[in-house]
Image (cartoon, rainbow over all chains, first blue to last red; front, side, top):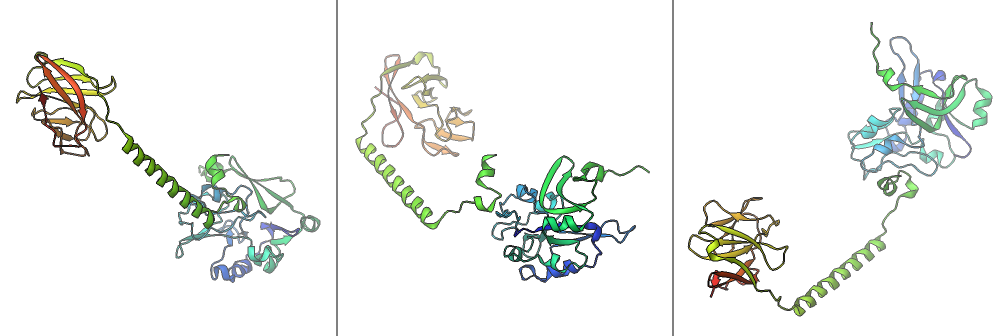
Length: 192
Length: 170
């Protein structure tokens, strides 16, 4: 939108939680952050990775929604569930390959990152990208990001056999074209 | 793309909202259609002529033992009927289609009732009225006439006028 794209670079994240708190400041969901700041392997490392909604071209969350509550707008933003329709069944929570949707139990509704639609739809940056000190969450043009960084943006993901293309880019090592997560392998426990 | 996915599109732009005016039109037109349909039914019921039933030989009375039954079709070949020789020595015949869901009725074990085995509906063997169970209407009765040993069917009583006499005439 407005020539800018959202880029997530896990290697830059310092775990400061500025994005988490900035997100929770929003009046649309005050006190509830839509950002998942995950520790990759807490016992081994302090490395963290921020997850915002990747805004899939063919959103799995909307595909599995039995209430027709999740909609994608023309500009490719997958919105939070529509309050009158959402039945808080958690289908989307279970189905999303990135683990983004959150069911707000108290209000019986799924809410998720909508890339600060109130801001980005009028040309402003999303709140998290505004506050991120290391620009692990960056909202810039594609030229700017490729010019200034070693990593390469990609928006193709494989989860087992499911191919997911997204609106949000992930910064990956130059050798990679797509992020591939072998779902079964991932769940497989190594024999001792 | 599947039809339901087309109807319930993920794209917000493809969502079709029903406007109030559209809904109002739908209500008015549907009501009008219902009204015309009811008028049509009314007119048809005024113009309806009494059905003419053929006179058909059903069975020989001596062939049906007391307590026995005989199946036949009347008035058409696709209207199954059942003839009873009751223990009170009368010949009565009914349509075999239960008025509930058209299962074939059979004589009950006690010989005094007609049973529909599907949902345990029971009809009186004397006049076909509902004794028990889900059937909403009495069994249509086949009007019989006895000429000597021969039993002739000459009409169908849908059971709407309970005043008519039952059993065999003649």
